[in-house]
Image (cartoon, rainbow, N blue to C red; front, top):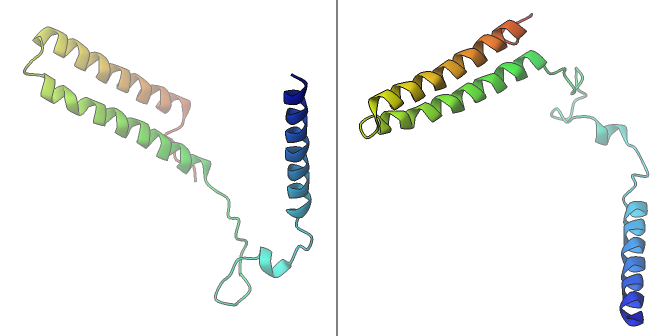
Length: 117
């Protein structure tokens, strides 16, 4: 029991020491302007490399991906049309499409689909 605790303490000290040494070594000592600037064929950049990203474009892209995946989920319904009960097939299909339309209407009412310039 005492030996396992001693070995555990030694391992803890070694790992803590290695983590401390790693943090001390990895600190950047010199901040060079040339290394921090973007490279444009040897010339100084004309504009800032950090251009602002349009949040509206990101929201439209995410909504497109979500609805694209949901359309891909509709494709197997075509294969199951012949082997399923017609009433249950129609009920499931219309309920799924209704959920999609409600989601699209909600996004429209929230203003996520309005493209602001």
